[in-house]
Length: 354
Image (cartoon, rainbow, N blue to C red; front, side):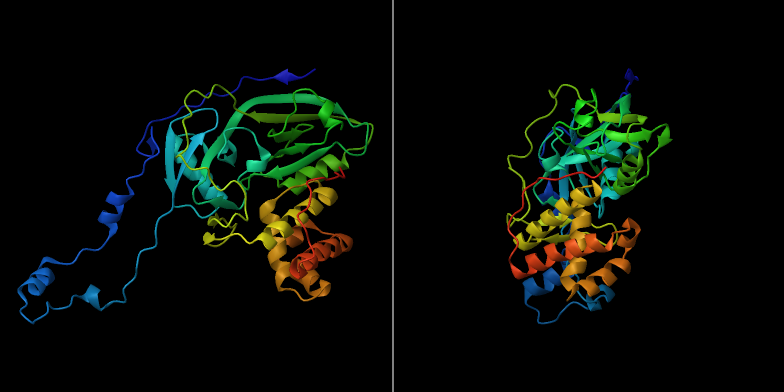
């Protein structure tokens, strides 16, 4: 029988980062940030005296035009005032900014979606955010614990993670074992298996543990669902539709696990290639990770043959995944097809192996 636990209550602290509307006073900010000419210089030019004001030390330095500060709007998915966040370069920093904005522990944030408060895995925030996207943060809600009999080899789950230590369910295959288990749902964070904490584990580690459970055995899985409540506090985003999908030609902020974030225009070839790579990740490993797929594509784009690609994988941080030679060869096939223009948009069908 499932056991339910009391869910935590979250407070929405009204601080200077939270507003009830979506307007940012960028004009005032730009006027404050922009350098102004000194009064002496203005006076000399106005009087036409022919002499110039002496240059200060700062005038002798190379001029640097300040880069624009990207600002995003966010809300908690279960309802909250609108927050304004900026100054992050990766997912962990983004979560910390949201947590600071609402005065909640950063560990309460499970994942974020773009332009929808719903648990919609097609709108999951991954490695890219459209510059006009509205961010919804899904926070911890009701914990659930159930016993499952592994009557088949595959449970029917696709696992992803939030990039900050939480693995959660992205898909449940229709008709599978987990599809028939009550209370387990898409968006649930997998917190424990047989009492062992999985907080801090990557998605492939969680998928491996589930795969290694012997067929015919009974195991206990504890999940935490995203908080759900009324949406009366959620207003319209900004009147913008948002980027919705990649490859639309709109600029996006590319978040990286290391190094600074960059503003890019998505490439359709890259989008199709990463979709195919993600399908292979689901089929062979039971995980889904757009940022991982993009990293694999970037390594493959620089390689001239499968041997170079395999060496690139081994020399990168991806060696921790332990890809088999056959899987690396399949990845190279998708990459070479994309580079040659032979790869068409792929379907989202997948077949879990755990």
